Every structure is written in structure tokens, then in C-alpha cells.
Amino acid sequence: MLGRLDSGELAEWMAFFQISPFGEDRADLRAAMLAYWGVVPFSKKPPDPSIFLPRFDGEKEEPEQGMKTMLKNLTKKFRKK
Image (tube, rainbow, N blue to C red; front, side, top):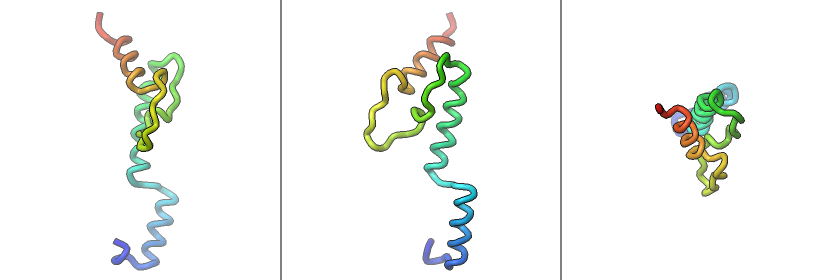
């Protein structure tokens, strides 16, 4: 792509990115925000929003804040009796 862009067009794309970021990192952030706001109304104590971001560094989730634990708790809360 860089072979087809001149320096002016590249500068325009860089400026546009500063105003309105795009790409996979931004998409992950948007998805995490949606997940967070989907859980907050059903939580007594809102979770740390960062638990919804994907992790690629091998970092382990804390059990009390892990997404798996939260989903299990939500399932128990809304399971039909």
C-alpha cells in the first residue's frame, strides 16, 4: 500500500487516524465497551472494564473478576426457576 500512496495522501491518512482511530485495536475496545455496558446494569459492583479486553500476553485473569465468573453469576441470576 505504501508503494501506491504519495506522501501527501499518507499524511492525510495519518491525520484522519488522529481524529478517528480505526483498526483491530479500536474494534477490540469498542467490543469491550459494549460488553461492559451490557453487564453493568446487572452488577452490584461494576467490574473493571479492562477484563473485557482481549489479552495476548499470556496474562491470567483474576478469578473474582474473570469474565467466566461474571457470566456464570449472571446465568444463575436469570435462570428460570
